[in-house]
Length: 392
Image (cartoon, rainbow, N blue to C red):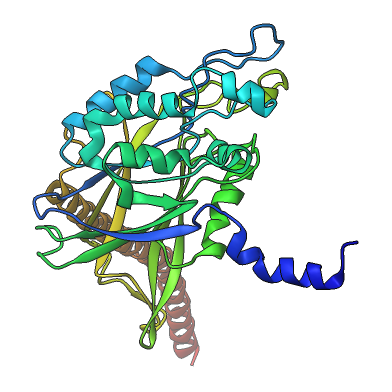
């Protein structure tokens, strides 16, 4: 008979006996001073072992787009500014019974070898990896930590983050005046399915409630590519500083994230992955003060730009040119306001002169008429007076 004492003993030893995936890990990446920007890419939603096990099916369960994946890896390998995070669902959990999974080919060890071979050209650019839904299922059902095995195979065992990754990138370059400026990023796979952009946005934004204080929040489960910008207020003495904050959902390499979604009138997933170019530079609005010096802008601003693959090595940004354009736009705005003021002032002057001329003309004619009448009256009075004198 199962007793209360046995229950208490098992509850007390649960934490020691249970095996679980690591929750998260923190890392700091100090970037080379020659790097004025960072090209950050998340590779996820590959399921390298999925090679069409469901032969007869009404649902689409196609393998990932391997040619596109290899082309992106080749381009990332040539980009000196590229840094890569492996964002989960890299492996495939076949489902079914344990015997079925045991005979399934490619098995987990083969999947690790296949993915390691594909990622070898960018091994030195990988900053870390975290688990996705498929890796969680593999661990729970078969006790294998596939992501950890992959990182060990790549010689990057210390860069396995668990289920979530917190990374701080430190810039020190000509844009920052050779001063260290940090960009804090949270990477999370996400949970359950999300078919609409609004749902994906809500789930990605929800990461801020889990861990606040980050500049970027990434999710990699939903197979939708979008970037959303928001603003956060941070206390700086007696003043509040308005800082940008970005929420990013990245695309994967499969047409549908799940078999069930392929025949439920849902749109195909995004497979056009891209790079988030991040840089820190002096803020052109840093001198803006509002609300009696209550709300201000940061001295340095964290910025981002989305770069499509195929254009990664072309120059997309020249900060000096951007700042010069910003100054020119500001000067043009002031000139515009000055011209509007001068034109408005000239119009007021012309209107006033026209009104005065009209009034002068009107009252001038009236005065002349009155004077003429007065002259006639005076003349008539004089004639009358003369007549009176003559009668006397």
